[in-house]
Image 1 (cartoon, rainbow, N blue to C red):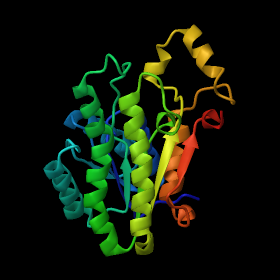
Image 2: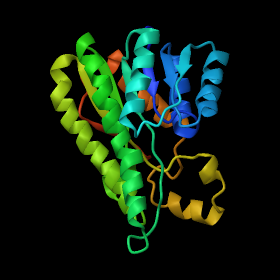
Image 3: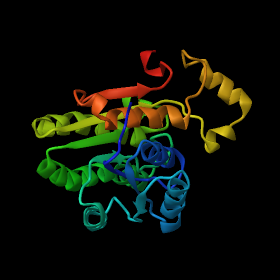
Image 4: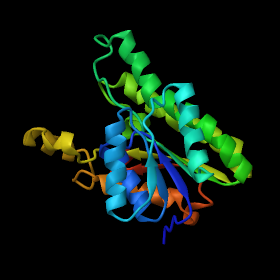
Length: 248
């Protein structure tokens, strides 16, 4: 099940956190994984862990919000492996604030880092996928993009935009053997959330029907599924990995 042997995957923002876990999961299932981060050492650290678990891949540092750097990344991958089968658009960050206090540059920054990156990488990679008549593009959106979130007008807009882009691109390339889907994680347990006060964590759990946070593995496994041949008839969809949060 979910065998990715022979596939080449590019995971943006895979130097740490969720992106790193996704890269490790895809490598564990046999894909050769291209790790990417702004900082070369972060991309290399993830690649070292892939090698340690017996996998193969390549570390390519790049700012994927810059078109020329995206072109360079993809050309490096094609020169090394000859193909790109899976693209996971994971790069992103947050700059939260209430709208009345949010500087315009924080709005622009989040659109560039969390939405434009996905558009640029998809635009370049899809050309190769069309030639080979095969591809899997998986966009990491958020429950904030589905439901909205107070203090995140910039981030929620970027993640909602990613969902719209997913559906539009899925229609453009469906006939070429390429699927495009989005994953919308909810509250995921990370090193950052681990430091949150217990009272706040307990309050957050009241809003989640499963009454627990998700794990990085929960999201990474969902990515592996959508990247696999078992998901070949699924496209243009948003898979919520949120413990039921979006039902409310």
